[in-house]
Image 1 (cartoon, rainbow, N blue to C red):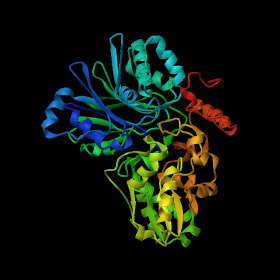
Image 2 (image 1 turned 45 degrees about the vertical axis):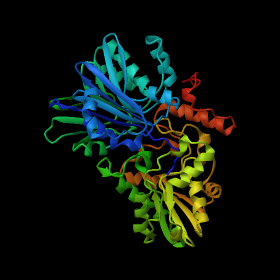
Image 3 (image 1 turned 120 degrees about the vertical axis):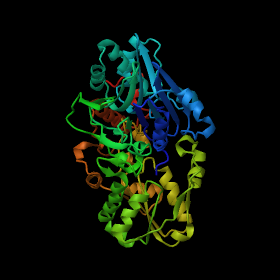
Length: 501
């Protein structure tokens, strides 16, 4: 449970051909996916040829019964898109956050478009340069702005939405799963050619409502049936006849983000016909098989709630060790450690998780966690267990050792942030005070997902990235890191492009 990590965004969009208000669908679709983004949220609906928008900071709010009609009046229409967001690009002060809150819109020469986006753009410098020629006052607050304006430019040039989307797929490098609405009321969705971020589609029993959602839980909460996962390079429009699917661009490989399985997704979401919680249970079983010497020395298993819980069940089932439910999250302590000052971080992490001292005192404890990124949270947890009298502390980590940054929507920007980029598991154990740190193998992770290795993005684990500019930047960043040059942020967000890119 890496509190320093910012999660990718969550996308939801829907259309209702009964002409009923779409806002309730979008609202609940985002509430179900609020785990994907706590910093801001936004709703956009389409009616009478106009876009109606509401954007705000923090979690999607509870709506009182007395306020429902006001919300319907503010966001009319039978088509809508929404977004919950964490910033993985741009500034993070309140003014910048609200300006970067999605959905975003753009207009030019009578054309308008609105999008909700999940992912991250790599070739930001090139796109900003191109867009600024068409929009001299263009202000870049988030990557969604880049994609929205690029799509609008191509739409105004080509007068054809599929052609415009294909140009975006060809000329934007990065991860992008998008739901959008045009100024004339076309409802559409598409994915980058590698399919790095999730996006699924579903419909109501009577086939009057159709929707796109980052995770299937956004469909479930609305009583919609899951139909399919949008394919890499696929473009989809929706009419009363249902989904119209077009494959606009085929890549040599699929590269779905492996971190979705370990950390981001809700356990009751489905990827490739398999529940996420089932995959995480298998992660736990793999850790047992790969670390039998630790199993033989341990007394009890505990988990870091909540993404470690399912894997802990797998450890318990495979090993026979008791899973002691001795860690509980304080549900209403919602401050996130990554937005706090260093001196405040320890106290907040310490308050968020309650560990029952009597259940670990004198025990050799296996702690099941989803990942170690910076290591701060893990160190604090180990310290707390030691204070409570744990005899030994072993870390079982479901996501393999992270050795490189992410360019596709996870806030792991530099090598210097990553404890695994500069230390072995043995060194990490000493740093955080554990008796051992045991990562699941990459092979075990791949096998558990049901995907083939070449269908997953494993760039942060292997240093091999699916897109060319990301690979070039990663190599340059690593060289600078090894030479001891201070990292000041993402190389692809600096004013000058990487040499040769």
